[in-house]
Amino acid sequence: MTLSVTEVSAPAKRFLATLLPLALLFAPLPLAAQPTGNSVANDLPLEEIQTFAEVFERIKRGYVEEVDDRTLLRNAMRGMLRELDPHSAYLDKEEYQSLRESTQGEFGGIGIEVGTENGQLMVITPIDDTPASRAGLLSRDIIIAIDGTPTDDMSLQEAVSIMRGEAGSQLQISILRTGEDAPREFTLTREIIRSESVKHEVLEPGYGYLRISQFQSRTTDQARQAIERMERQQPLEGLILDLRNNPGGVLQAAVGVADLFLDGGLIVYTEGRLSDTEMSFSATPATPAGEVPLVVLINSGSASAAEIVAGALQDQRRGVIMGTESFGKGSVQQIMPLGNGEGLKLTTALYYTPNGRSIQAQGIEPDVEVVRGRLEVAESRREVREADLDGHLGGQSALPRERSAAVQRLQDDYQLSEALNLLKALNVVDSRRR
Image 1 (cartoon, rainbow, N blue to C red):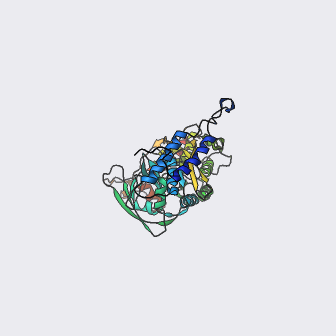
Image 2 (image 1 turned 90 degrees about the vertical axis):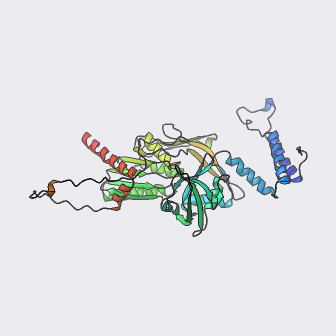
Image 3 (image 1 turned 120 degrees about the vertical axis):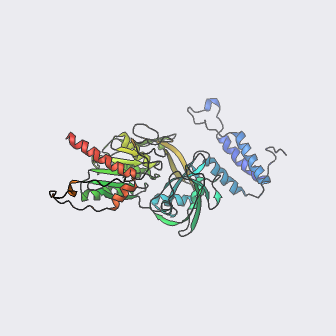
C-alpha cells in the first residue's frame, strides 16, 4: 500500500504541523527583501520534511515492534549527527556526564580511547597502566564485538557507554589485528581509571624522558613541574617528549605544553564557518625547557591535541619528530549543553599547524621514521681486551654500572633508544661547532 502525506496518523500530523511553521520561517524572502550573503542558503526543504514525516509514520504503523515517538526522534537526532563525521554525536545525560569525567581524568572503564575509520570501531590508543594496556591491546586494533554484540551498527558513543561501567565488573571484547586472520578475545575487569597524564624519569645523566599520555586540564602544570624536577637533578642536555598513543584531549593543555618549549610564534589556529570558531594561539616568552635539544616521539596512536604539539614543534624547528605517521584527527569538537540536561558534540572547525598544514586525515609525518621494535643484542664470540692480558697495566677504576629500569626500557623500546642516540649525536655535533 502506498501512503500519501495526507494518510498519516495523529502523532505524525502533529510532528509535521510542528515542522512546517519552522520551514516557513526559513522560506526564501521575496527578492526585494532578501538580505545579501548566504543567510537564506540553508532554507529547510519542505519536500524532505514531508518525506521525513512519511518515514516516521511508516515506522510507527508497520515496524515489527511498537516504538514510542520519543525514541524515534532521539534516534533521528543521533543518526543526523552520526552521518556528519565520526566525532559529532548526540549525548544523553549519561554520555554527557561520561565525557565530562574523561576530560577530568577519572572514570570507570578499561582505559582505551576509541574512534571509527571506514565504519569500523577502532582502538586509537590504550591509556597507560590500565586494564587495556596491561592486556596488550594496541593502537589500530579493530573492535568487532563488545560483550558479544557486533559493533557494525554501533555508534561511537554507544560503544563508549557500553565499555564504561562499575569498577570490578567484567567486559568482553573481540578485536581483529592487522596481519591476523582470526580475532582475539579479551576479558577485562573494569577499574576506576585515574589517569595521571604526565610521567618523567632520567634515562641517563643529563637526558630526560617526559611522557604525556593524554591532555587534561592539569597536564601543562604537571609537565612544567616534571621538567623542573629533572633540571634540579642535573642540567638537561637533551629531552625526549613521548606523545605515542596519546589520543589528545583539552586544546588549552596542548597549547600550554607546546609553550613550554617555544618562546614565541604561532602554535595552532582553527578555521570554521562561524566567527567564534576561528581562534589562534601563540607561545609566550617564558620557556621552562629553554634550548634543551628535543626529540618528540609519535605514532599512529598520536591524535588531535598530540598532533597539535608535534606540528607546532616541527614547524618552528624546535625539535626532531621521530617515530611513525600520526593518526590524523585535526577537527575541533565543541560540547554544547542542551536545555534537557543532555548535550551535543559537534565538529565546528579544523586545526592548522603554524605553517598552515591541515592535520585532518593527513597526520604529522615524522622527520625521522623509526618503526616500533625491540633492541636485540647480538651474541658473538668472546673478544680479548687489554684487561684480559697477563701483566696489563692498571688504570683508574671506573664505578660499576648497575642495570637500571631505564636500561631495560631502552632495550625493550627501540624507538626510545633511537631517540636517545639522536640526542647524543646532536650534542656531539653542537659541541664541535662551539
